[in-house]
Amino acid sequence: MSDWLSSTWEANWRSFQYFNLYRLVLAGLFFLGLLVPHDWAGRLYFSSSPVFLLLDAVYGCCVVGSLLLSIHWQRRFNFQLSIQVAIDAVVVSLFMYAAGGVSSGLGILLLISLAAASLVGRGRLVLFYAALATIAVLLTQIYGVVQGYFEIASIVQGGILSAGFFATAILARLLGQRVMANEDLAKRRGEALENQIRISRCVVERMQDGVLIVGRNGAIDRTNPVAASMLGLLPNPVPSLSVLMPELAEALRVWQVGGGDSVQISAPNGREMLARFERTASSDGEVLVFLEDVGRIKARAQQMKLASLGRLTASIAHEIRNPLSAIGHAGELLREEQRGPVQERLLRILSDNVSRLDRIVQDVLGLGRQQRAEPEILALDEFCSAFVEQFSASENLPPGVVEVILDEPLTLCFDRSHLDQILWNLVSNALRHSTRGSGAVRLRVCRGSLEGRVELHMMDDGPGISPAVREQIFEPFFTTHHTGTGLGLFIARELAAANGATLDLAGVSSSLGGHFILAGRNDWCQLPEMNDALSMA
Image 1 (cartoon, helix red, strand yellow):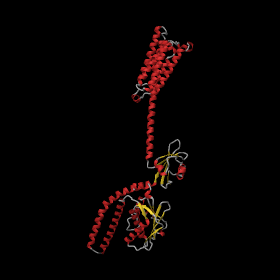
Image 2 (cartoon, helix red, strand yellow; image 1 turned 90 degrees about the vertical axis):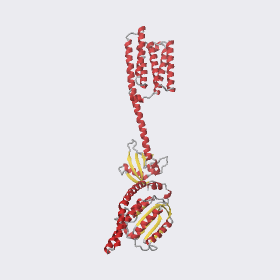
Image 3 (spheres, rainbow, N blue to C red; image 1 turned 135 degrees about the vertical axis):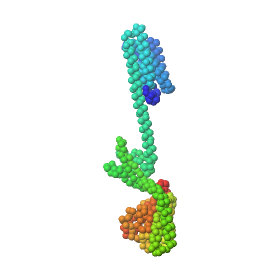
Image 4 (cartoon, one colour; image 1 turned 180 degrees about the horizontal axis):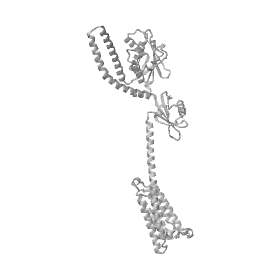
């Protein structure tokens, strides 16, 4: 046996037990052969002498003892097997001698014993078993020839039978090696497959995206915990896809006939999801459906954007602010000389542009230093009234220029400082483009179309926003005013997203004036999604 097979060989006690059962049946057949009439036994020439009856009884006891040992004392496998093979060689040889030598055909019984022992035995021991059988057969045959019971030509038959012993042992050993190698290979592949299944199951369960395995008939076979949470599935029973989400089932049907690989849908709980479909090589025709939380994707994108912006603001602070301060200081020194009106006008232009650049730097640094949202329940009637009073005092506006319209007392879950900054940016822009007359800027608070939503509408009586710039209005550094930084609306939208709200531009006609809508929730502070959004903000 090769070194590899020797290292992986294991005692096969179950096969050894079956071998002992065969030997027990053989002992019974010998007993019957001794008891039946001579005519029934044919050419075996058995006689019911006390010696052979005793030999058969001893053989049967040895077999029973070996069977019990193989069941209750599974130790020293090779020793037990070798002893039993030696007993078989002696007993079968003696019965073969009594039956007329090799011509009786009982040598086939030793071939069976050698084949069985070689299949479960180890290494060169199988050659030892063949040698034992050969010695036993040849000795009994030679003894019979010397006593005159057998013909001398039967020695040649004994030699041929002995050669068969070695051939059987070697072939059975080779077959056993092949069986052991295949068994070990199947075992290792089974373990590898089981490990792969465990790893795949762990990967699917730990994925941040939801995974559905949908059968050919539309039934949901398996889901991971994320998908169950996103869809609100109970452990049992899992409904079919058409019952759970008809919209997703329809998208799957369209994809199967050649539609798009992904589609954005709304879950039963109102959560926006991006569904992707992928075929598998399964014989059952199963389909993988990957569900991604659109809110999580946006939050992750925002996190990456803010991280990049943080690195940008650090560069701006070092590369722009210091030379900008030097330019402003040099301008102040030149202003003290008072050389003439031309120089005064140039210094004023220089000072205005230095102030504008300083505001841009301040806005960018402020965006990079955005603090984590700390939402609280705000009474909007009190908050908006206090804000309008403060803003009007800061801008020296007469009463009535900025109006607050409340349809009903409402609350909003929002960070107080963030909401104040958003409204300040919106009202400042609205005032800049308005007529500054009575009711030029209107802040209306009303209930949203969806349950739990609250909307703040910011409107002015100005010329409105041109359709050509509507798509760019929230982009950073985009502005239509020569003194603006182009970051006000961008910062306002980012702050709204950090609080689970949205800021959008409403209206399509420029004659209606500017109209922005800030939509948030009044129950967001109690929702589980709030913690996820805050952790990514």
